[in-house]
Amino acid sequence: MTSICFYFQVHQPYRIKKHRVFDIGKDHEYFNDKSDSNLNNEKILLKVASKSYIPANQLFLKLLKKHHELKISFSFSGVFLDQLEEFSPEVLMSFQELARTGQVEILSETYYHSLSFLYSKEEFKKQVEKHARKIKKIFSMTPTVFRNTELIYNDDLAQEVEKMGYKGILAEGWDNILEWRSPNFLYKPPNTKKIKLLLKNYKLSDDIAFRFSNKGWEEHPLFAPKFSQWVNATNGNGNVVNLFMDYETFGEHQWEDTGIFNFLEKLPVELLKNPDNNFVTPSEALEKYNTVGELGMPNFVSWADVERDLSAWLSNSIQQDALEKIYNMEQEVFNTKDVDIIEDWRRLQTSDHFYYMCTKWFNDGDVHKYFSPYASPYEAFITYMNVVNDLKYRIEIINKKKSSNCNFLRVLPKITSTDFV
Image 1 (cartoon, rainbow, N blue to C red):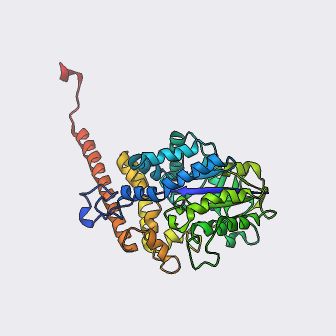
Image 2: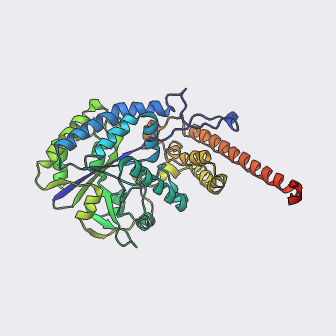
């Protein structure tokens, strides 16, 4: 018997507008440049919603009502949900309608789609807790399974997430880590008690997410019966096939004219033709299957680029410098107790900002360039650092005001009761 587990990541960052050095100390609005369509978060969200979220949600609602065996799962970044509330509440309602079917699970992640686990465990916990509150408020669900930003994972993360009460965690099923093992089983992370590890079957997932419209691919065109045969082949060699991908796969990364929606509509029917197949959510997979052994990942693994490591965000000095500077501000940011400064600082942690600074122009270069709204990684870095310097300026102004107030209080004359007589 093989269970199929669909998981979709849904995320849009708050893109930073082109903040010039002359704007430092003058312009404190960092996001949503309405004069530049590449940086206008509202326009981008509505465009992706029109191409992807709306038609995909409509199709999945139809499929879930038609096939009660079908189960799917999502994780939404907090900044994506914030933008839906601000720019497109009707799309948010369509996700809520999916959740109400009872066939959808919502997973946990960092609120700001950040790399916080790498730099601040305290900030990481705060963001995960904030995200859980958001999911409870919007979907009336409490997540029990965790996925980290861009599927970044190692053994330490599993141990930390278990302490936070999560039952399962997602990771990339990368060949270099698995060696002879299969991603189609559940594993136990080292030095943990109960948490289970669900691994992405990256070959089957990427056949849909990346190769579907590639006319140079030997399997093109891909139709539902052929893909179902590949899934069926795992029977007897695995318990669960984890198909993890960006939700924007449907309609945005793979346009409608590629046939992606027709493929998706026919897929459940084809998969269910095999009586040994069924669908599960991540938490159902945890309940249904035992771990088959321990799997250690001491080094970080992600689902990004050909290396499946942290190089998409940390491969060069400008990325490293930007990340160090933003996280080094943590204490002084919270000392201000200014909600706007704290929120801006957290939005600046979103991993996309550092992805845009990547200079790997072999193999993955076209991918980074495709997703970046900036002309070059260096423009992305300069823009980012101008904003960071403006944030520092705002903090200095608050500190000066505090210092001035303290000095004022020190020089006030001592008042006694006789002064009021």
